[in-house]
Length: 474
Image 1: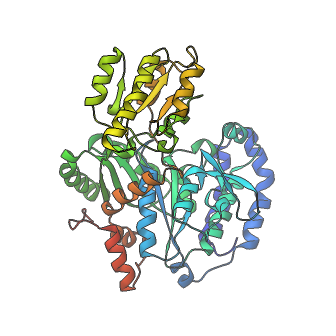
Image 2: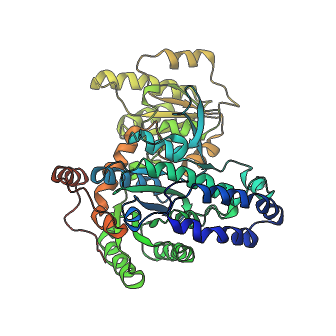
Image 3: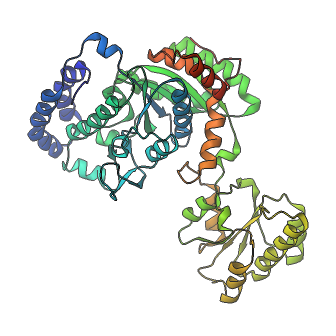
C-alpha cells in the first residue's frame, strides 16, 4: 500500500502475529503463520515513509459506532456525511465491516453486479460519491457461515486487515487532503470480535476518532456508553464525542444538562449532538411490511408502497361491517387496518368506502390501507381478487399468508431500517438530524479546519440550521 502512516507498519508488524496467537483458534493460527510473512512482506514493499507535513495534511478518519442495536447509527452517519460534505471537499466514506448486503453495479466492470453492505450503498448513492468505488466502501461482508469459516482457518486476520487497509488506502487517495473519511461501524464497539474485527479494533487500525451514538435517557444511556468507552480505551481509540438519539421532548433539557456534565467531568469529552425523537422515522412503510412477512404482496395501491404507518395507527377489525364502516369514516385518514382473509365483507366494504371518500373529497391520495392476514389457510377468491386489482385508484391492500397474531407480532417488534428505495425517509432523516450536531466542534476535535471560503461556510451554516444554543462543549 502507498501513503499509510509509518506507525501502521512499525507497530502492527509484530502486533498482528501476537494477536493471532492470543485470540485465533489453533487451526486459524496455523493458517495465519503460513501466510503472515508474505502478507507482511507485501505491506512492507508498498508502504512509503511520510514526512510530518504529509501526515498532517492527510484526511482524518471519523468512526461512528453505536452502544447497541437500533439506536440510529446510520441516521447519524447520514447527517454527518451531509454536514461534513457542506464544509469540506471530497469527503470519503467506508463501512469496513458489513453484514446485510444489496446488489449494485460495479464501477470497475461493466454489467457486473457485486454485493456490498446496504448502508454503504445507501450513503454512496444518496450523496453521489462518484469518486469512490462501491467495492472500496464495503471491503468486508460477513454473511451466514463467515464466522465458522474464520474459525476453521479458511482465511486469517491478516488477510482481513489487508483487505480493509487496501480499500481504505484507495479511498484515502481519492479524498481531499484537508478533509475527512467517515467510517460507519456495525452495531456496538465489540461487534465483529468473533472474527477479530471489532469496531474498536478497526477504528484503531485506521487511526480514527470515535463518535459514539446512544439512545436517549440518562442511566441506561450512560451505562452503555461506559462499556463502549472502555473498549475504545483498550484499543487506544480517542473519542471525539457523543451523540444522544431519540430523546423524548419533555426530557430534552434534562438530558442535555446532565449528559453534558457527565461527559465533561468524567470523560473530558463533549456532547456533540442531542436528537429529539421523531416517530415517523421509526415507522415502517408498507414496503417494509411486505418484506417483513414472507409471502406477502401488495396487490393494489402499489404507488403508495413507501407510505409509512405508526404502530399506533394499526387497527384490528373484529366487528360487524356496519360498525367497521362507521369507524372508517370517523378515524384519521392515515390508519392501517388489519382483517382476516375470511372477512370478504370487510375487504369489499373497505374498497367501496375508499371510492366514496375519494369522490367526496376529490382526493385520490386517501391514506388508509389494509393488511389481510391468514391468506394461506383462507385464500382470497379469484372474483374478490379481480375486484381489488381492477378497481381504479384502489387503496393499498397487502395480502399476507401468516395468521393475524403472527403478523401483528412481527409488525410490532419490527424496527425499520433506512434503504436506498425510500428516499423520502432518507431526506427526512438528514433534515431532522443534521441541525442537531455541532460540526464545528467535531472538526475541532479531530483536527480538521472547515472550508475557509465564506460562501461555503455560509451555505453550510444555512443548510445545517444549527440551533443558537450550542450543545455543551469541553
